[in-house]
Image (cartoon, rainbow, N blue to C red):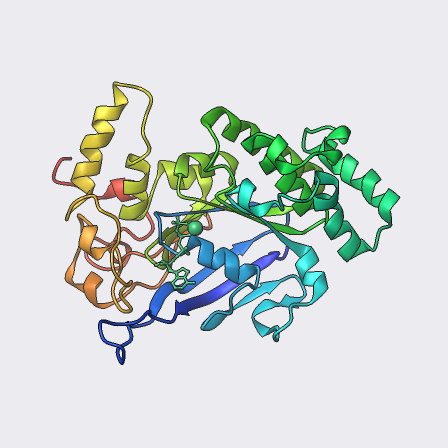
Length: 348
Ligand SMILES: Nc1ncnc2c1ncn2[C@@H]1O[C@H](COP(=O)(O)OP(=O)(O)OP(=O)(O)O)[C@@H](O)[C@H]1O
Ligand SMILES: [Mg+2]
C-alpha cells in the first residue's frame, strides 16, 4: 500500500470567543474542530460532509495553512505543515491548491482569464508571457473551455464556466492536493454534475488528490472514494463511500442519509418517517459551542446512553478500513463495528 499523501492527526482548532455581554467579559473559545484524524492517498478523493458549522471549512483552511491549529499535526508528503513558521514555503503553496464555492468572489473581476491563470504560472514556474499564454490556453481546453476565452473577463462567463476557470487556475501549479470547498453548491443540478464529471476526469489525467468538502452527501458520494462525516467539531465516522452510505455505523450518518430527498414519491415518505424516528429534540442542527467531553450528537441521538454525555468515544475500526466513534460500538449493545441496522430498533 502506498504512503498517504495527507495525514491529519488528532487535530484541534479553536477560535477566540467574541465579546460578552459586558466589556470585560469574553465568550469562551469556539471549539471548531476537535481531535480530527483523516488521511488522503495520492490521487484519492475524500469527501468531508456534515451540516453547516460542523468544522469542514476549518479543516480545509488548516490544510491550506491559512490557520494554525491549537494542537495535532498535519503532514503532506515531505511537508510538516503544522511545523511551518510564519511563512509558508512556496513549494507547499504549489503542492496544495484550493477552489471555493463562490467563483464570483474568488476570481479577480478586473483581470482577464489569461492573467488569472497566468499568475500562478509566473509565480511558481517563472514562465514568460508567451509560455504563460500557451500553457493557460492548454489548461482552459483541459477544463472544457476555449483558448479565445483567455481574453475575457470573469463576468462574461456563467457560474459553471467560472468554476471551470477556478479549477484551471488551481491546476496551473500542478498540485498534489486540491481542497474543493463546496465547489458545486452554488450551481444548478445539471451544471453540478458536469463539473463533478470534469473533476473526475481531471483527476484521472493528472493524478491530483481531492479533499471534497460539501454538506450534501448525495453529491459527495458520487465523487469520493472515501467519506468522512463531521458533526459539530468531530469526525464521527469515516469509510469507503458506498459502504458508508449503504451500511452507516453512526446514528448521525444514518440521519444524514435519511435527509437526502428522494425523487421517488414512494420512497420519500418512508425517508421522512425514518428521519423523525432518528431524531430527538427536533430537527434543528447543532447550536452553541461543541461540548468538550461528550458526544456532540448526544442531544439529538435516538440511541443516547448516559456515557455519551460524559465522554467522546475512541475510534472503533472496522474490517473495511473505516472507523466510527460511537459508544454503541463499544458499550451497551456492542455493535463492534457492525452496521447500525444490526441494532434492533423499537420499530423493527
Ligand atoms: N474565523 C472564525 N472566528 C470564529 N469562529 C469561527 C471562525 N471560522 C469558523 N468559526 C466557527 O467554527 C465553526 C466551524 O465553522 P466552519 O466554517 O468550519 O463550518 P462548516 O462545516 O464549513 O460550515 P458550512 O457548511 O456552513 O460552510 C462554526 O461554529 C463557526 O462559527
Ligand atoms: Mg464551510
